[in-house]
Length: 240
Image 1 (cartoon, rainbow, N blue to C red):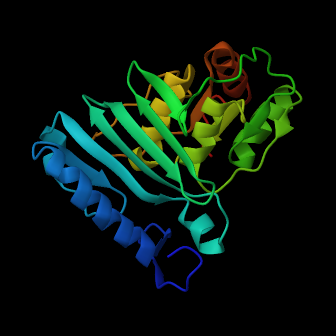
Image 2: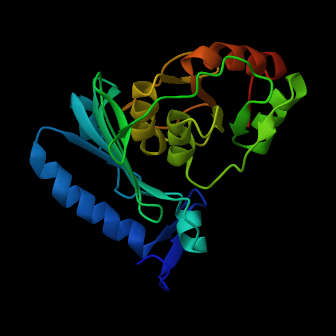
Image 3: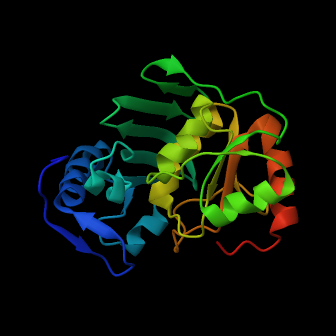
């Protein structure tokens, strides 16, 4: 469906949806839910059910992360799926069809892109770090130290995954991210020796009643603490 004329509409939160989002959601549901009937289901394009809250394991899916990029015909979108166990991702797959990049991760077993092992950059200094995210969040770091600004991009999942590949040193997100945007990429970057946290330094917990998260910061283990300190110093209570 990519590049084709598709029916589109806008959801209640003013985010776009296409026929492709719905088709991908149905396909993923049909393929994943038969794995185990006890697993819950949480997807951006499926009506939420409180039944998932009682499940120890839950599929967390975004059929198209970066729908605006998909609609614009650019490559910055991906299909994201993770199996969350007790609030943290256990296995994950993130696929960018246009660039043919398949990210896979298993808790404790590492992360790969198209079969090649991933590892974050060993950078320890903030100066000159490549940073991507909302302009307001990037501005905070830029006031503290000279950095290299990268395009924000449409897909948050890919922004975080690019920390795992070393293409981005620090990835930031606003307070509009949900479980489905994050769960798969979280595990990919964690298994590549990176860290994704809130501005309080807490790891993310998934499958809560409210799937939305506050502003977040992601970086390699060696850089994360310094990036977090700088972000806090410039914006103690981030509202972006």
